[in-house]
Length: 494
Image (cartoon, rainbow, N blue to C red; front, side, top):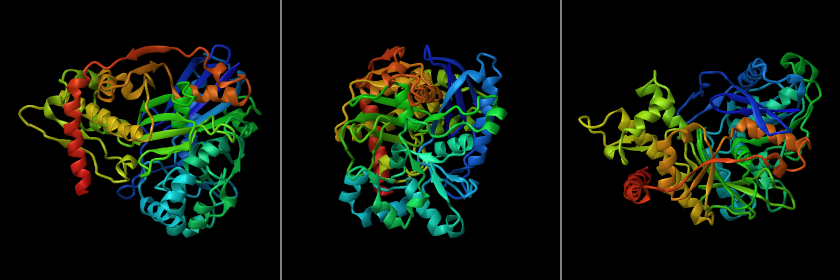
């Protein structure tokens, strides 16, 4: 018996098939090979085509099936992880009305700030655990204000994963976790937020049917099953934003446990059993995958937009013919501190942890007679690790005190320089696991379809592969403080 996981990322679609009996990953595939472009029609805007996502999902599944490592007909449930905070709008015929305004788009910041003031800061934080910011609700309000012809044709709004589930099943559903990441959920009253809906003038009819995150969100349509060589009628049994899903895939389910990832964006995600919030909404709190009326488990999320996206930019502009592995080798040749070169990696939209300021990315202190590619690539990795430390200190201010952080050995954590710098500058050990968002989504499907009796059973074979301990913290501390001083001067003048 197999489980299929789909991970709708910003860069590509990743899919995996997991053996339910062993929880082992049988096969994986990614499509497309080249990173999917982000459309930026204006500075600070970011859009992608949902229809292109769907085409890429189909191609990824067909590529997976072609490995011959499993019988696709033996797949019994499907799980979906997806890039968070995006807005997808469809009409009554389930046709997409416009490109998705995705997570790193900054156009709705001012709308969100106005909503925060109008609803009241204290009330917003107490009920929503966040400022409305530039999250999904504010993105929808932007469409309402600026594209009324499109808005008036909307039948349902969705998060990206809800859209893929709709294409697979023909059903449109969502969950409390999804609504919370869109800032539609009132945690105090345990309902869709009347304050947000009333302020923005949004009808509750646009919200899909709300179902438990681990549940059957529809069944695979016959024509889609035929096209993908799957069995008609199997359930889509799990949908989660990529960061709660990453936490799930690392078995971060209990209060006090913490996960990190450094893909296109960088995230530290800690589980709490309290309805906590940051007064400045620099870190955000959403309903975790284990949230319920009885167990109010939340995920406290620090997001840095410019992590893998910064490294991708450097690769494309400084070493387009090199692999990321080769860049990591180059970075290892430079000393701690990158010979004084410093990088602010904030060039991918407004950064919530910087109070929604958009500073742009910067490469600082270039000495034309000293610095080379090794210094550049190490400085970028160090700058990203410093950004994590800056955000982690905000989380510490809000009561999150991790003793260990779990991360998948993937993306930037494949770099020994980055992984060790992250540990040294934060002072917190990191446990590395062989994890993948698509594998987590597959195991989530097994939980949702009751193939596993519990989440604990789904991760009974979960093993740490390496633990990194701080080694150079004292050497890094003054380097970090210099970097922090540069950043705070930028913020003060911005």
